[in-house]
Image (cartoon, rainbow, N blue to C red; front, top):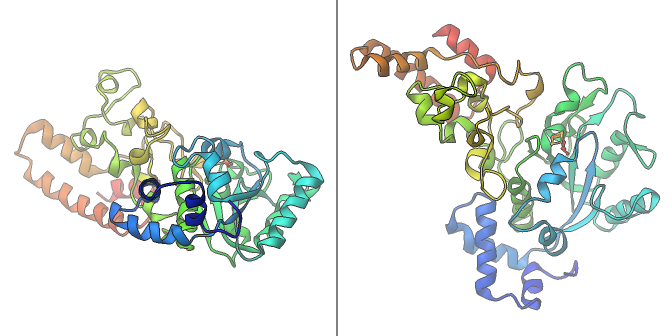
Length: 366
Ligand code: FSX
């Protein structure tokens, strides 16, 4: 696809039928978490869409984010790179290295100044410019330079979005997030360690289709994917509501698939789409495999008080568990539970951030 032709023109040139095109649009709608009624609008927008240029920088990270992208299934990464976007520079996937790679970055910036999407994974060390360099350029300086001509920045992974594991105490490199250094560009945080591949491609597809960034939550994440907590959409939620918990990884509750809350599940304080989108082409997600959610899409998840330490149990749920145990006689307990549920529902509805501390405080207040 040449950079001067629209996506619609390119697809027709490749012999894609109208039916095939609409199928692609339906897949794009689902990838962007939009309803099927949006398919005609997406088709109209994609007909006219130009191929955007993408520059992808990787700083302090484990390459899990790129590994995640290369496992996206709709569209395939090959399609994404070669047909839909122009990935002009990617530290891990490109063949060029050293000064040849830097020349490619500079050429892409010059050619598409003001129009390219900058994708960043990894945090940026600020304690010493020599901690992480590429072709002799410090990460901070490369970010500041490349951000200048970007139309928008996608911070892929919790490291780029919030500092992630490199920022965990005692943060020896002085790691910071992209948004700590860049203040004058739209930034979309696609958090998760790693982030869900379909969410990465969904955000890029949104920009390609509408030329705008999606609606974001208070932490800069697309609401379409991060609007609800893992707990809200978890298939084990009915067990939580009935007070049925696994207490160890091999007890009867664990074998019966009961709620993992007491084993440290951070689902109630974690906002992401794992429970609905799932992983590996929609096969499963950690909780379905019997492991508590670690809360990896939230800021400072590594310092959050222990992966297997239970969040404090809100009294409403102990009350509800008691009601299930003793029958309908505990009307007062039900009323108290309803009041607290309403309080929590309000927080979820308005997407105020419900943190580990809030839940612990809620338990004390109750
Ligand atoms: Fe961080 Fe990504 Fe975790 Fe790893 O690039 S979000 S350590 S999965 O690789 O940045």
